[in-house]
Image (cartoon, rainbow, N blue to C red; front, side, top):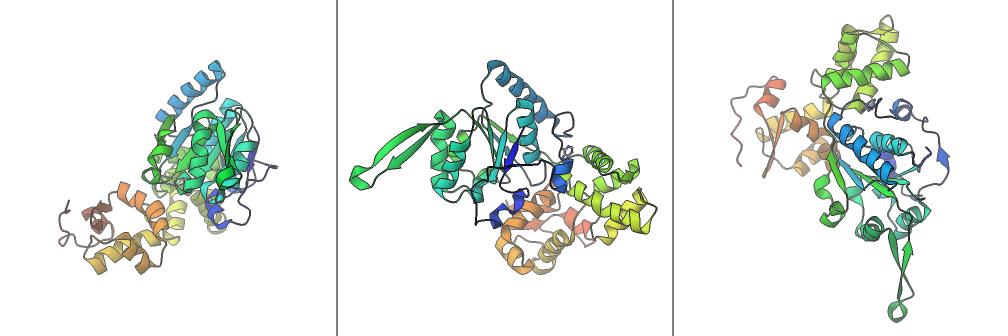
Length: 354
Ligand code: ADE
């Protein structure tokens, strides 16, 4: 399976506007840290069990019928393995995959260029698909539905529409915000799935797998200690393994035990629930300055000098899931659990005004 991408680090693609069109040279799958530990098969992919089981059946059926897979949409917080899963699906289908993200598809010719370069059965992965602009979306509709590109040539009175056939491909879209996707685009996906946060047990497995690939020594308790502070997110777990292994090497005897993990993560300001300085600053701000809330996300972002999107996509999903934050029609509120977690008195918390 060849992986073709315009960037190894998909999260940074919105910064890369200069050459948004996908490059056509193949890149090695193993270039970055994340790629080197990415599972490539369902057997190696830990967690998301229900989704994996249905995907295996869908893939086998598509293979038996010799048809491309239906278009798939994966949504959920960042770092849960949407891109990884797309790679696993491609591997299982024996198909090539082209990887891009919506911010890289600014001009009509970007999306047209990619669609025209696809081969039969190939998978096109578009990350952050909720950020696709209207024109790109409208180019995608007939491509997804009937495998055609509707092109116009000429101007005003002489304008002609041309239907250009495309090879049958599968689009895999990924988004952190399913709600921000337009209805017509969402309707064109045959399979829509939410990725779930990982359990401590699943994260421990991810951590042990990563440690073994990177030749890092870790005990069972060490893996669990890191898993507990990884916010249900394998990408965070994998980063923490690396950080903690530095401490293990320099300050201890090289082995990650629970003592080593807890010592290192305390120093890194990652608390026992995995909250970092920004998460705690967010909760503290709402409590101290806004009496626990509700307060609008823009106000919070301005006060913390953070980007609204980072707060919404990265901080909030886990704070909501952990029960520290509540979303109300009038803004965000810190829950009694949030107060307790920060060691603050709960008595001022008002009931939610739904
Ligand atoms: N690394 C990142 N995500 C993973 C997963 N779901 N399974 C195994 N290793 C991973």
